[in-house]
Length: 140
Image 1: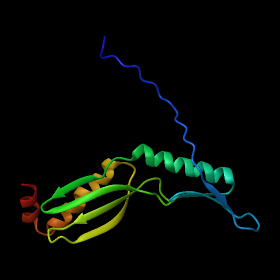
Image 2: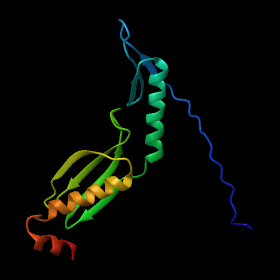
Image 3: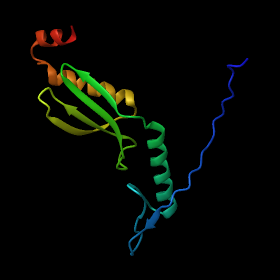
Image 4: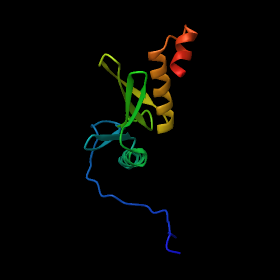
């Protein structure tokens, strides 16, 4: 059949120049930097491995920014460089009906979680949760 495909899981290797440093002294931690990316570790190898893992996670999850809109509010969600304390980080930029923009960092394990949080956030901003009629009106 002409529509058949063969699919295989493959490991792709990328050569990346990075700088490994550590301060002098007893048992200092290693830092490895490549562009804006940085990772730390107890050894040079663990720092390199942490950098590789962070880059892999970013590239695996990356996609163009997502736009979520509700009742005049618009959220633009984009994947951001994680700081090492969390695996993935997103930036949520919200534009309100008056044109004001707010920024916040958002933690989440997937795009779906971040989009759900953005929808909740927009609904909360555009309704009065203490007034049931505004919530019902927003949903209608």
